[in-house]
Amino acid sequence: MPRLNRNALVVGAGIGGLSAALTLATNGWKVDVAEIKEENFTVGVGINHPANALRALQRLGVYDEVAAAGYHYQGIRRFGAGGRLIEEFRPTDPPDVPFQISMTRADLHAILTKAVTDRGVKLRLATTWTDFTDGPDGVTVELSDGSRNRYDIMVGADGIRSPLRTRLFPGNDPVATGYACWRLAVRRQPDMVLSEYWNSGQAKATVLHLNAETMYLLVVEAGSWSHIPERSAMSRMLVDRLRPMGGLIAYVRDTIRPDSDIHWAVLEEVFLPSPWFKGHVVLIGDAAHAVTPHLAQGAGMAMEDAIVLAETLDGAEVPQALETFMARRYERVKYVQDQAHAILVNEMEPDPQAKAAFAAALGARQQEITARLSVPA
Image 1 (cartoon, rainbow, N blue to C red):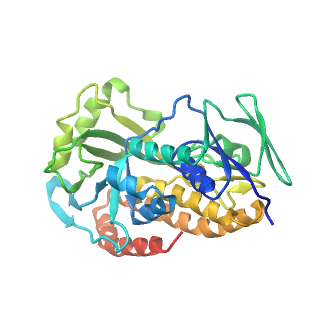
Image 2 (cartoon, rainbow, N blue to C red):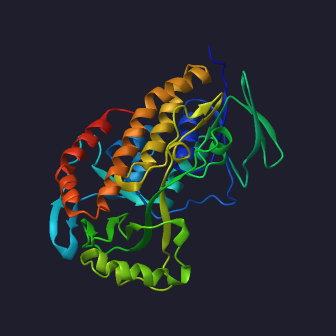
Image 3 (cartoon, one colour):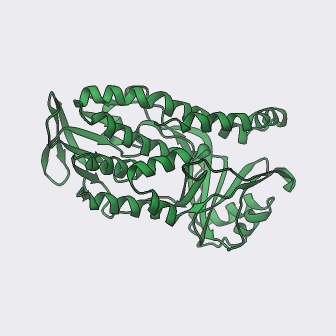
């Protein structure tokens, strides 16, 4: 039988790391979180929680706080080139949770941080691992603050550029998709209820509501790290991309100023083969399986990882638990990655016939995805 009073080191205090710390601590583990940043903050603008992610938030015990802080999705209008309205979709909520809730990343980070702190998790800022040695009974970790500690498990939630992944599985670097994404938060007006999606042929833009005051713009276009926009030119470049579009997109465009807080990054994926662990060290979230944002599943998959990891560790030795963890997670995550990638490629498809053929089957595809992910993780 596993011994009592087990302890864990979680590397990274993002969504996956905080979720792992929270659910392990809830299950009786003593948890340290090593976060390399000197201050406890998150990077990014907004985040969407579809129904399966909301169920994960329920299991983490923070759903009520998320529901209070976020925006309950009301639907979306989709526009094609030239501003033609293609579709207006208003969802039917599942019986247990809303169809989707969106929120700022800062609010989610604050909610999860409070939850782990309330559970007695030790958050060690400006700290990361410098070396570790895996043994038959656990992993001994040397930390950048000079300490050396033994843990029953080391959980790598250190993001898409995970140094821990490089150490464990060299050569599995992020893969560029050939596309990049612009992101910007702007003020929302009370009469703005539905989200909007516009496709100009060269770029696609979406506006989502994050809370009562804030909206979130995402623009996807072809892009690579070899052509990073100059910070001083970002506002002009983003305005140019939005010129063919109307509605909420035009509203956002007209708010952009030279000092607007615009984020730009290449969309990348991580395809780490199974298993995501060696010995007593396991990777979760973007460190193991970064996904494009086209199903809004990055955070949901990370939170599910954390929950399943804690469940499989309950009453089991670590090596056996990690085998069970992989059996429950790999195919589900791979399915999400493949579906999200297919939608990205089609959104940027230059051939109208190929684009239309994919779009015609998109409704059935979305229903299949929703049904697959409604099964508990």
